[in-house]
Amino acid sequence: MRRNQSGVMLLEALIAILIFSIGILGIVGMQASTIKASRDAKFRADAGLLANELIGQMWVGNRDGATLQGNFQTGGAIYTPWATRVATTLPGVTTTVNQPTVVVVPGVVGPPQTSSLVTVVVRWQAPNEVPLNIVHTYSVVVQII
Image 1 (tube, one colour):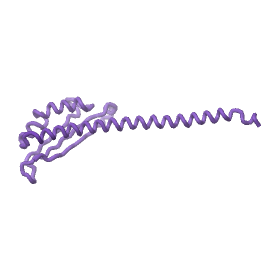
Image 2 (cartoon, one colour):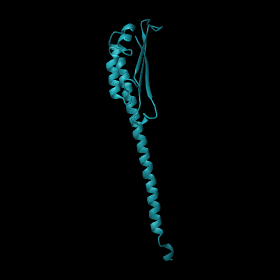
Image 3 (cartoon, helix red, strand yellow):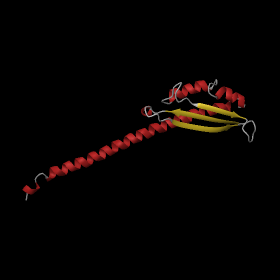
């Protein structure tokens, strides 16, 4: 009887190690997925913060449509340093690739008549997504009164 059971304990130990290893591999895979999701959330939060920062500057300054266009649209006096800050904060943004865009449409119909419709679009590419050309976008549309 004892001879028929020799090696059974070794087989049980190997099966237990196999099950444990599969569990550990599953945990490592979940951790990698969690790190990617956390990184993506950080980039999205940074993009939102940058867009809201620019909109805040619009609210505290002269809100005339022509002034907003001159200062905040692409190439404007306030846009240029802000775009540089976007390039230093978010990955995959350079002076030629994934530049943020700001469009100001003055005199939007509706109360009040002097309001402007502003669209801010921030783009970026995560470091491991550059070869795949996956571009993330954060857009904000606001009416400046």
